[in-house]
Image (tube, rainbow, N blue to C red):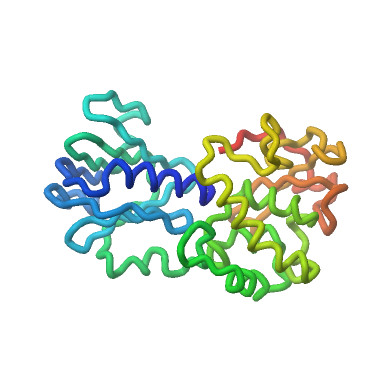
Length: 280
């Protein structure tokens, strides 16, 4: 699932291509909206909200989309060949005189009244890259369930919006805590630092073509996707395990030397080394 910085970049790309222009083509390939026609309306803006995209259109309408694991938006100049995937994967086409935005494999696509956007994003916590960012509220949300594992709390978009599986693993490493440590067990100083560190990481990466949490070119991430290679700090073998509630488990990476707290046993199904995974 994309991280908040990836969604921010997608929103900027769409905004730059569409905002202020009149739609000359509109094709929503979702049965519920098959008859909806947005042609003749001006795109007002494209705004990210956590991992959600809100394309606001003249007349009080918002096209809400979410990329989930495999979705993407591609922007093409007029006359350029589309290369984002086969035609049957296209869910929406928004075209102007000069540019065309094509949404591929979008699992979430809703046409809402702009006044009803809260139906889609009202549950989200403070947006790490948004104007509503509030580190104190984010920290209070995280600590509201002190027994919850840190990694799960970070992924819960109701606490703070924009962290995905990559940043979850990287933040836990930078804090020196395993993702299975109860969030309430974090020392007060580390807990207070957490929202600020998360925001700083996403802010630093929102304009970068290649995400980096290390600051070292060619070694972009500390732990995510690096099992069973050695830790960049202590050279202990990075470990990987799934973390989640059973219905939604995510690959999680950590260094057993640099990070303190509970973790799956090495021989358990959750604690076996997995093959290195490709960063999305």
